[in-house]
Amino acid sequence: MLTESVASKARVLLDIMRETEADQEELLQLALQKRPAILGNKTEELNEIVSREYRLLSQMKNTEKRRAAVVSETAVEAGVPVEELTLFALAERLPETVAAELGAVRDSILKVADLLKTENAINGSLLETQLSYTGMMLDLFGSTEDPINNFYGSDGKSSGPEGKRNNIFDANV
Image 1 (spheres, rainbow, N blue to C red):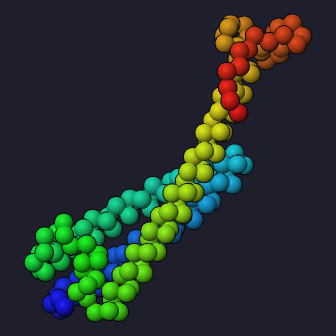
Image 2 (image 1 turned 45 degrees about the horizontal axis):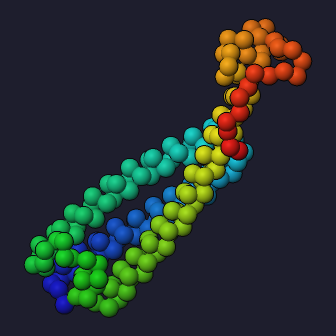
Image 3 (image 1 turned 90 degrees about the vertical axis):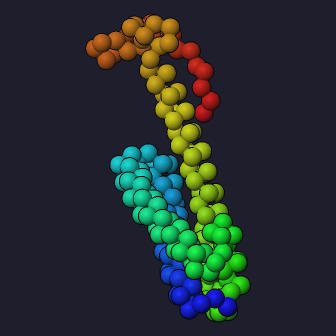
């Protein structure tokens, strides 16, 4: 068992980890909200979600700094090198209830992080597809052979012979 001071710091660490868990769950919810915004081409909604994500990530960065400081203090008080003070090493020295809580929160954080990774990969793929589609649509309206005299004239009406376009398609959608 560790000293009461170290046990107290472990409870502070547990609270910080719970904050991290809540923040990650909120980040996951934002990632889930992104998909319909991407698919619906709702740019304003997507911008708002991304803005909220950045604020949350900034908050999480501060939480991580607090966690690192508590771990460093705990390691010094426990007489253990900070690089050797893992959650498992700390849990072995704590009362069983606190150790179990630390383990449960850790498992939850890892599970949410895995879900977040999967959702972000899906959203990234959707965004890439949307960008490819947008690029292809821009190619439809602009000729790569003659950028001045493309399909649309300066008056906004078709400028070429009926049905003839000078576009070169090199897009995968």
